[in-house]
Image (cartoon, rainbow, N blue to C red; front, top):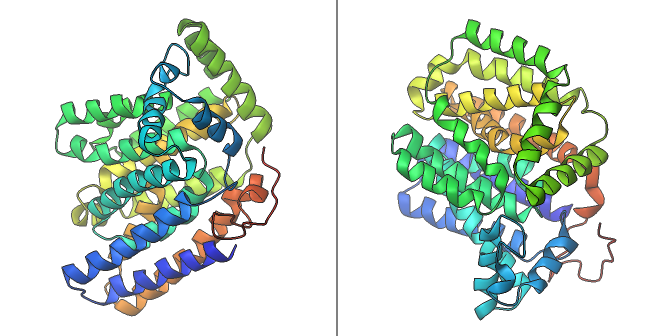
Length: 370
């Protein structure tokens, strides 16, 4: 737990500096580079830490040629297979691959967070706690989410060709990235009355068996291989997550959504991407309430593309405070909240993350992977 706490406190300290001191571009760039390298090394040099460790390690070892990376022999998301093969040509070492994977993901995340919020360290702290650590190990989906997150700028700029090309690239790493095709619909304001009607309608629909029936039809229409993956994902997710989700999830989303909507007018004038992020988050809430009682795989897989907006929207609320002292108080409060959310996010598989085990830290620790 020490390395996680240190990382959170480091990001909190840098948040204080970013919110109170006018740093020169060169200084901020140097600090950002330090944090980037630190996080890349933390995620890239892990060993037997995170989910799906055995599966991805065995997959890496199984790719020995271009033919072994062929989509006809492996999964449909062959972009990840090709990436593994290309790295193994020069570096047949899984840790080197993890370092390159982490470097790519963090570059996309850092660039996007700074662009969408106008700051880096405070939203990065919340993102680290609420999303990043609990997703460590989901190699394919994490890079797909990073690519999709980066692509949002092209929706705002109405450069849809670039957006769809990046979505196609993301789908080569994880088929769940298809859900990104909904994002061009979010570049507009949603009236509160319309939003309320949509939420009520989807809550009522989610209480029926229609989503499950529709999902089964789609799975069967995709073909034998894809249908098998759908069934496996559905069964695995439901068995792991249980028959339903805790009350904490919907309560948290409703409270935060109320806050984000209440401050939409003020923050929408300060942050040009705020409305796009908010609409995407609203869609995530809709997906959550629609599928929480029927298709947990949709919640666990698809929701990640929408819920990544939560740390950015949370951190953006600091712009409502003019006094530096108030901003520091809010940053501290967000740190406490984020740490609580961090503990909650890893609670189903805490033993896979705590303690952190890497190539140079806790190397003697024996962990049972599953």
